[in-house]
Image 1 (spheres, protein in one colour):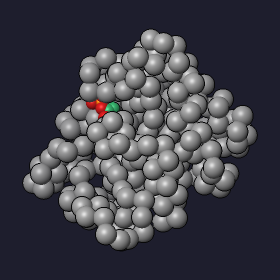
Image 2: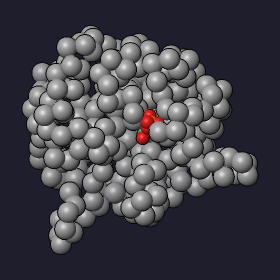
Image 3: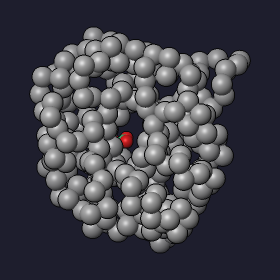
Image 4: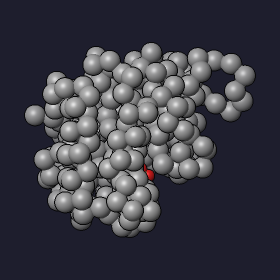
Length: 251
Ligand code: PEP
């Protein structure tokens, strides 16, 4: 049986003080014995303080991005080694906002995946189709392409560090959620795709999160589907009560 995972992507929200306030609220309100893996991803500048703040809790800290190079003249960028150096143990890669606004291609993401794995980071790998793909009925092909281009070169052992996050772009920040049936259909397809390439030891163990307008009132039904192993939460992760309710829905 796979554990459930709920991760909050805070995006470019919350300054230092607000980050501390939200973390304090989460520490107070989240069940400390939750059989759910909980991850929060504040902005780069607040990662070090978040790691310190959460040291004796069951909440893990992820970065929202990283550069693929080990080091070098890449002004404004942050390497995998810099993240592990401050105690960050996971990273979100391939979020649709990074793909769309920062031109992150499958090839770049493949290199980021390799750099993250070389530093033993856990990767929350995001992918998902746009509305036009679903309307053209090419969404399954697109998902297979996104997975194969960035992840199919991996070895079986690498999958211990991979969490998949299916995030249909049309459902992110829009209030429009994939129905639980649509989510299950795609998650089953993703698991099958991984199974065909890597076999059951990988496909049955890899967590596949759903992301896209998950809220306290729809989380339980989505998470109850057999191939949905939790969620990657955007907007609702910024309010402690909503995030706590979503974590509880995964329990
Ligand atoms: C996200 O950005 O990963 C996300 C799922 O956002 P939201 O929950 O706000 O749709």
